[in-house]
Length: 101
Image (cartoon, rainbow, N blue to C red; front, side, top):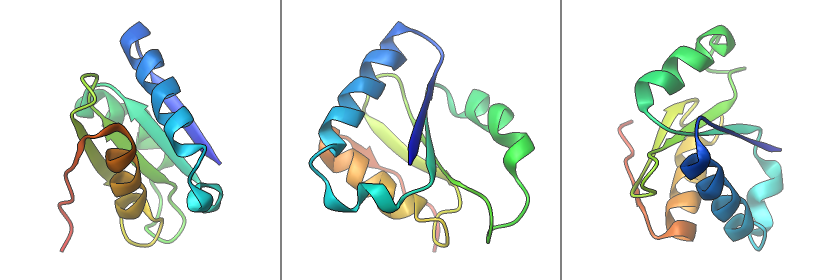
């Protein structure tokens, strides 16, 4: 299940757009993820209580409020955040910023 977090109206609208775009994706159901729409710093502060281990952390993706960049923040490989970031980026015509090796 994908959970959406946002801090303003622009984020809510973008969350709805992403959710609608992903409805057609067959593999979206396999993700346990949080998609945060807003500033990366706020995202990090909000997920801090969730951080335990790369083997148990949920996938966390941050999308800037302009919908231009999609950044996997937590659990990139193991939790699938890298793949989900690419999927989201493709669905909203954004750029996935993958920083893992």
